[in-house]
Length: 108
Image (cartoon, rainbow, N blue to C red; front, side, top):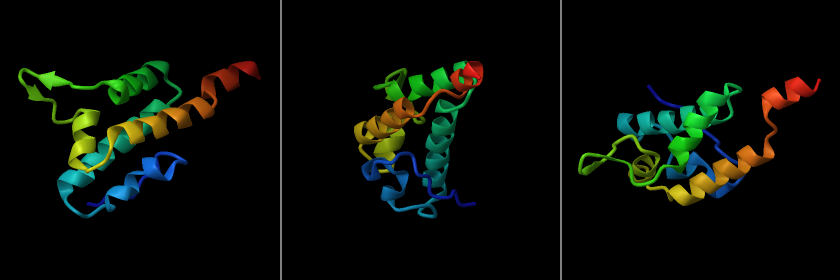
């Protein structure tokens, strides 16, 4: 199963497609799917879900015992040969530009 390329930002450097696209390996496809879902959660109207995704993107140096957490944002970026700071910056700047869906609904 292949995960479609996911554009995470208007910033070309923060686009997941730069790692070479899907199909390289199932493990990498899974990692892309995790980041893609986290990005969708970040923009989700449910505030708790959005906050959890934001915490995942901002978390650095997450460990389970003495080993890095396999599914941390930092580790996934490293496995995909991406600079986590560039991806993080692109995603967060996109979030800042995008108005909150709930706020828009409440203003109507």
